[in-house]
Length: 172
Image (cartoon, rainbow, N blue to C red; front, side, top):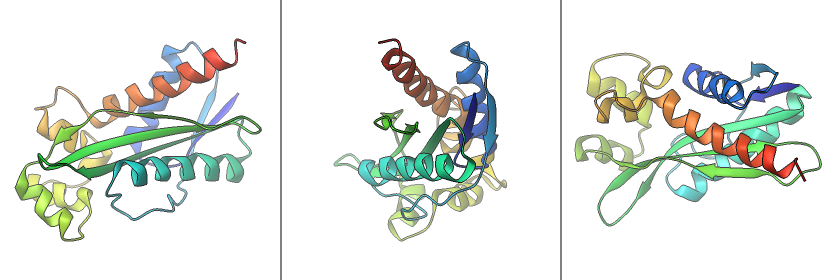
């Protein structure tokens, strides 16, 4: 089986590889950067979910893989403040798309404010931490959980939710 991820982000690739292993699947996992079809910084649960769906469908079409997986990080405004959110989607030809959401964590105002002003989380986090490419490594979730939950672990959870639903649906 060939599984294609709609991103070249290393944290997302590692998450899917670990989920494939956890599910005891034999699969080649490939990556291809495809457009999300949403804003660079998705700003709601629904927009983030739609970005994941768009990536899953696009990578399935572009690679002719058996399965396409899209993983998307975004933010969502609540009465309490701006939360980090993430969604995943799994696409297989001629099957309904499967989606799943993951962890939520409140962002500090010094990070939230530039996002509300139109900036993207990745560069804001690079500036906040004085490091480069945080999104390829622990991500904002890793920074704000003191390393207890990293970006690949956050997406690993979502990838397991997707694969688990797929495997259950295909047992029938």
